[in-house]
Image (cartoon, rainbow, N blue to C red):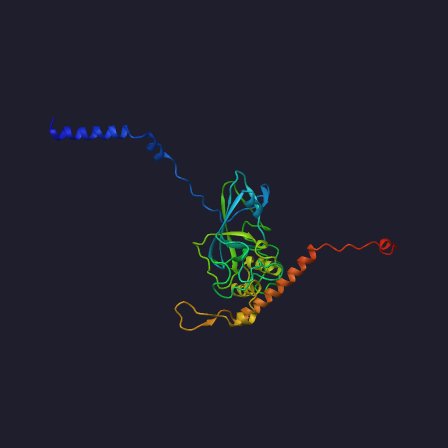
Length: 304
C-alpha cells in the first residue's frame, strides 16, 4: 500500500471520528424545523358558528393581536392574528385610529385636551407642536357598513368580499389582512410609512368629538375623495378653517413653484362632508339619549 493511500485512509478515519464524537446537541439543533410563515388571509369569510368577539375586547383578552402597516397617512393594511385554537368572528368598529406604538396617549398637540367634547385634537399647524413622533391617522377597516346613501362621492353601503355587516371570521391560529382607509389627524407632523410601527385604538381614546367619529366612519368606507376627506379631517381635528385650507400651498418634489394643496371643488366637498357628519352625529345622539322622564300628573300637582 502506497504512502499516499495510507494518508487518505487516515484522513477519512479522522473525519469519521470527529463526526462520531460531535456533541449530540448540535445534531439535534440542526434537525429542528424552522418556524413556518403564516400567509395572511386576504379575503376572510364569515363563519356564523364561530364565537363572536369585539375587536378591542378580544385584544384586551389576548385572543387576537393587531398590527397596522401604513402605506402613508391615507391608508395601509391591518393584520389581525387569532391567537386561540378555535375560529373567531370579529366585529370591527365603524371607525378607528392608527397610533404609533411609541406614542403617548393624552397629549394631542397644542390644545393638549384629547379632543374632549367639541374641542378637537388641538391645532398642530406646524412642526414642533405637541408630542414628537409620527402622526395619528384615522379611518376605518374596509368599507364602513350602514353608511347609507347621499355621500358627495357615491354610495358608502358596499361591503368587501367576505365582510358582512362589520363582521369577519379568522380561523384558529391564522392571520387576516384587511384594507385600512384613513386620513392624517395631526397636521404638520411626520407621515407614517411601511417601516412605521403602528397599531389601532378606539376613537374614543383619542377624541370624544362625535362629528369626527362620523367623519372617520365615512373615510373608512373608501367611497370619498381622499383630498376632500383630508381637508375635512384637518378642519375638524386640528381646527383649521376652510379659508386656511384653501390657502394652503404644496411644493411637489422637484418643482420650482407651489400649487394649492386643495382645489375649490375639494374644499366644497369637505364642507359637505362636515355638514353630513354633523347631521349623523345629531341623529345618533337622539337615538342614544333616552326620553326624559315625565312626572305623572297626580304627583306634579300634589300640595306638600
